[in-house]
Image (cartoon, rainbow over all chains, first blue to last red; front, side, top):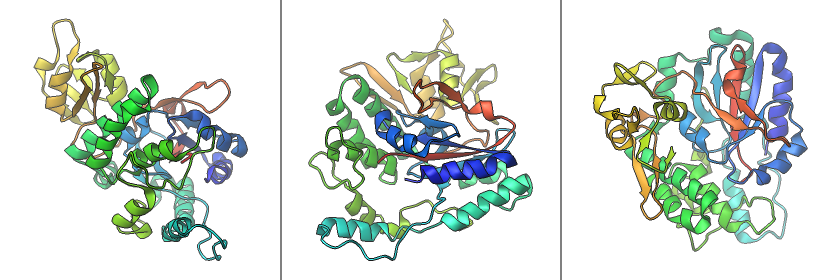
Length: 240
Length: 116
């Protein structure tokens, strides 16, 4: 989790007129709260328990970000965002279960875009519309993620599931979440949010391993492999 | 957009989706879709007409009488570069609401993350 990194970036860029806003896509805000308490953000730190932000901006995984200029115009669409590099070379701890080793090995294949992403944000902060990374409105729309009828129907199913989860209970949500997963397998927020509700023990922090369950057809490791491996897990910004 | 009936007020529809009911039709950004039949005599919008005209899938839990109107399927996830309004609670003790438009005049880096 990189909330401290985003908070540090906010502190660095606030004098340049940039505000970092973080949105936790968590159906249960209590799961996000410890991370926020630890990061002690001075930037707006929001929670979106209905995942409305996905639909409005086109996010399909986390962490992802959009850039918005002073006029309220998007100058970059939803794309993967990172501000802190990851250790992908140190030996894994010994004695881990085979499944965990496989998962961590796959996760290490996820491209580390932190340095390039940070440099681009800094360039935009300093140069504004003259930054080579700031796109025109037409370019932003063209570069936004695809949304065909299946994507849109998946969004409706996921939102209905979210509503039923909150108002009726998890069992009522599952058929609609399963439909969302089938309609839009590229949307990791639909899958990871649902999976973690099955695999997180009561009262524990959200499970990020998300192993197979009897409820959903997919799980993190097998779905990442099926989509081409960790190398293809993110929506890489066009400049990286 | 969650609905417990198949009509919606123009204001609520605009707040949630960005589509506004105007004399020339249903409009968002530079796009306007003529849909005179979408507006009922009481001023409410017919959700089934909105679904058909705007390409917004309508998914229902018939047993509970709850519906979800999905986003428009226009090929891309954005139909305009104008940032939509976003109002969400802060992860502070009082859960105060925060509006993205409060940052008008500043650059914003909006980052989605999750505990999972």
